[in-house]
Image 1 (tube, one colour):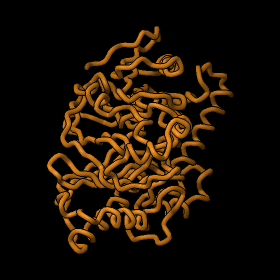
Image 2 (cartoon, rainbow, N blue to C red):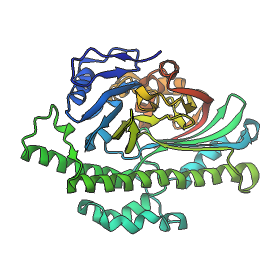
Image 3 (tube, one colour):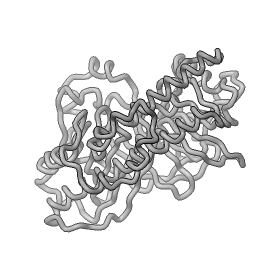
Length: 393
């Protein structure tokens, strides 16, 4: 189903790939963003769109000469990584529980960080520029080093999956950890102060922005790129350890070559050319889907996930959804569902089934098949995956 234009009477149109009506608060958020004077051409909403902070999660916003730090959000560079392994389902039989425990031992989750720092982390080139980052994070260098190669909490996860041909895939979801969060908060507060000083009439304080050419813009853009690189490398470090765990169980630790590797952000901003013009493109809960781009669209922990290839649809700024999208808030999910529901909805998946992950229950998410149907003009499905092991943050 192609997009429809929302009736919002904004200076910039809003095109939506979602087949559901936006709630009044969501419409207001879309309207606020589309009313900003520097927004280019139109705003694109992905099929999994839902409430965010300042801007909707699942929105793609192109801007001329300005960038909105809260639209990128606080988990800068959050995204997905996946590899297709040479292994098949039969090799995993009877090993799932131990694999899960070994993954949890190898990769810190939640607020935990690494006790031992490996060579790949110490040698990361990003540390050379750490002194140039915002003064507000300078005390965090050792924490950032210890967290590189850790998952974090919330909806972050590590999964062993099978495709429809019973091939084993490894997949994970994570971002720029505490350092990315703190960098974002420092810059968001600067943007808000500037807006106050300039008495800018913005529809929502969370839409405070930086103007290109200013020192504040330059500082944010530099820190943003650094955090995005940290997030991507964080996924690489975890994936190498994850792959090591699987190889230990299946081939006695012998290194194997992935048949396909994908690593993509879904919370970030880049300079891109669209409709013949250079713009700053912010994807807040959206994946780049140019022609031949590989992307990852996960469902909830009891559903399917998809490896996709982009179709380069210009109207969506060559973007697609980043997942199923939440149907209800975390608090609402905890009230609505019981532990029995969690056990029922995660049948056949080797995962934690306790109160700590209740807010991530599949029922709290939109049906992933519906989301995929609504973006058949944005991506083609390369592989359909079903998870059999899930480690939550």
